Length: 128
Image (tube, rainbow, N blue to C red; front, side, top):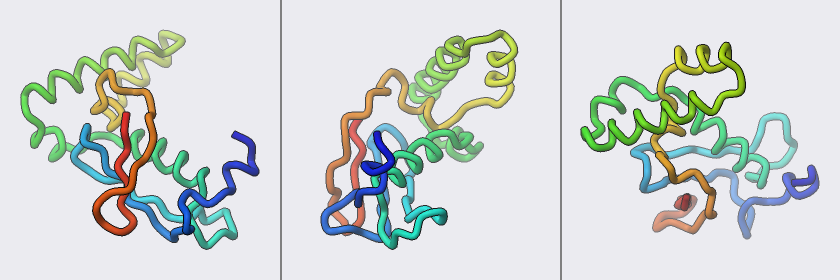
């Protein structure tokens, strides 16, 4: 996307915050206007960057322990696939040592299909 497109409001009317949920994972991603931007509203770029950062977080012990055995198996498989896709052996070792990330919760559902308004004000549902 161009920098002009990234600076557009993410919603109409513009909003000062968004909460993104996805049925694939048990947490939400909170999006606020970037501190480097003078914009009082959430931009397209804020959403893209926020989702990226939110999915790069490490999985907490509590999140892992609360997952069902089937979910743990699916997440573990996704983690191993992600590590295998790294370009170099050194990067693969580093990524493996860093452990599970929230992106692994998506399993094979990694194509972004969009956001739809949720039931609450400011809530959006991410479809993958």
